[in-house]
Length: 402
Image 1 (tube, rainbow, N blue to C red):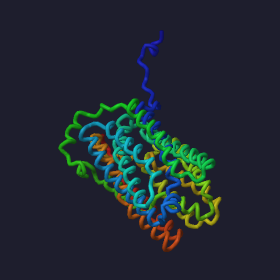
Image 2 (cartoon, rainbow, N blue to C red):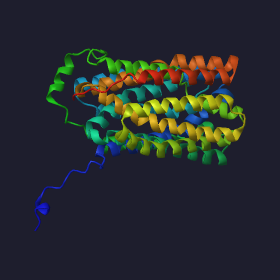
Image 3 (spheres, one colour):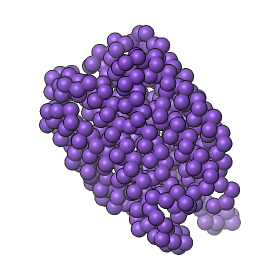
Image 4 (cartoon, rainbow, N blue to C red):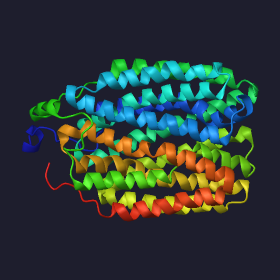
């Protein structure tokens, strides 16, 4: 018998941990529920509830900003108690309860309240979930882990619009009933989390000192992480809600029944792209991928500004998915490379806050520019801010020690 046969089996770094797979399946189901409704919300707001594009900007901006504040709190909280699963389960459960209620609404302000509550649930779960993925994963495949999670998320976001399109094909006027049906995959999400997710107990003993640190403090983080946050804020100021892309698609001639199909194609492209993008992050490093993604985003937004035909929209949505594929796994992987392990939840909280704190002014400003000056000015401003953010990210350097 060879000595190699007696040796313990080598750990396979390419095997994703159980928690990553469970959270990937959870994100798939959750986005099936979410994206059955989301592509239709702008039309529902305008045609059924009597709202405007300005209302859309306020609703989406406020909901995402509130969500980002909650993400900061929940990330810090998960560090202090050294427990993440409870927050993850509660966040998904809250969204499961609130989302179907959209089918019962009668006024724009009610939609704002429902979307905000839904985003609070997202805020509670997101930072602890991202930290749990990082806690559970070897650094050598962390980019792939985040890429897999985002790929499953986008796959669910592709399936959801297909189900919505099929439903509306047979019952074209039953938007409210469609929203109520989102409760089915949402309940499956909560059951899967309760059964399959495991608390990661591998945090270092030194993590106990987190309890003496203010939850919302930036003190544990160095200059590079703070510069990264600044770059994220600048970029997000030009990155309004993707709901405006659906508005642009309608203006260019994409019919209402095709919007879920367009959204589906968009997410299929993002899903496959994230699987490849995560591997590129592990190979080339996250900072390079973020720079490339933001420059590419600037080009795509400029193209949305000058597009003139419905078929342009289909190509641009697939191209826009490439930005997500490059940026999403890279941005989260860079967080883990810039911060101490024991403050990982708090770091993800600040990361999500940086993304969300600029969403309200970005979406409101974009909606106002769109309404007053047209798509060329609105999309052009987003393109310019992306170039500025890409220049800032070049100053960020990863930590040299664990």
